[in-house]
Length: 271
Image 1 (cartoon, rainbow, N blue to C red):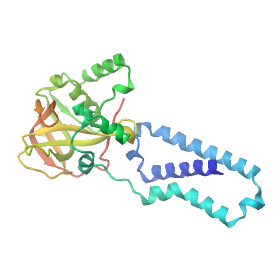
Image 2: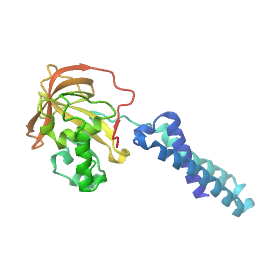
Image 3: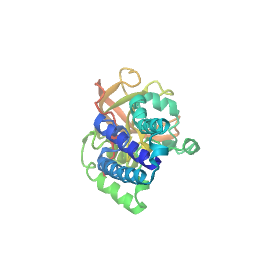
Image 4: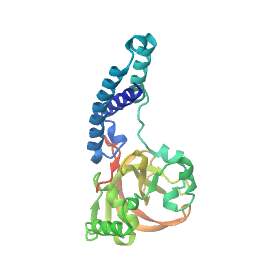
């Protein structure tokens, strides 16, 4: 019975995420077909387990007891209860603050924080190197860099956001003085009042390898509050960040305007 309930509950939960449109907050939608296939497989296996259970059970001692019926409905309802009454929350600058202003992956320090939290959350720069061999990763980056190195103006879209951000951190010199246009939410640098980060939360494969990615910016003529969504245009420079103790690609802002939060605020890595 337990196997049937687990499989049926997984099917219910995944179906709900599909129908409600919330699946994109958990996985990269480019891999949604895998979730769909697993949902169908769970449904088929749950029917198999139901058949085995009904075949082997003692009807008089188990099925007809009120407690057994109640427990069955309760266990089946747990996945739906969680997805209905514990709504997903859009990640924003409050998440950055909750994690702490240290950006351990970017800074290359305090990596024990991730070990303690049991998470592989990334900061500032998307890092897909763990999904390739060293030589394959270098080849992939060179191939992607070729798409942009001869461009003077680069428009960063939802589709190429993660790709461009990884490249600009890997090859900052190749992007010097290029004009970038992209959107994101504001996170004011708590240690430098004249600087702010423009971020978006991104997913490489699933929420377990998600992170906050974007650029440090300077030159804004107005101070915007955290979580304000903006479209910015500026030129890529390189600057040393005292708090993070490292050199960062930085956007020298030429223009900035506030916009509405996108319907889907997340971006995904496309391979």
